[in-house]
Image (tube, rainbow over all chains, first blue to last red; front, side, top):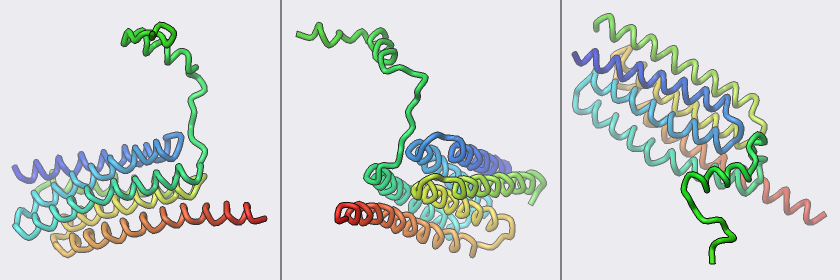
Length: 122
Length: 99
């Protein structure tokens, strides 16, 4: 039974790792790539290490696994934040979807949420 | 260790190595320095997962210590490279202003 749980966690973690790497390769600009890689990388590592803890099931292994996952959970947002700030301050060219006109988005949002037009706001 | 765990370990190894290879593709292609650092960060996290898989596969807990140290070093590398990228542009901008 514990092997079944551990195997499922490991397979799930591996699949998430591949999905994150695909996002890293396919996404159009740095910030979106970071969005794909940072969170999904953390999730896949957490799942695989949880599978590892289920296999061994001894206190020292579980404590180590918790320490690693906690450390990654604490440091991944900090690293991503610093990378994002460096992207913004260096002015790396960002992606812009040319198929979508700004007016179309504005009209769709207005239709959906029923917000008043800027002219009507008195 | 039964068949299903072995099979899932094989699948996990293949997936993690594939993700490292894809991240390496982004690191080679990446148009900017920041792309490369993000890919390096992802590779570090994937190798931490690989260490967890290796600990299960070979039944030794020492790989988990390797994973812990690797997570620490990877975080320091990301922070240092982010600071480097930021300061590097400030320096080039300042030099461009001076000229």
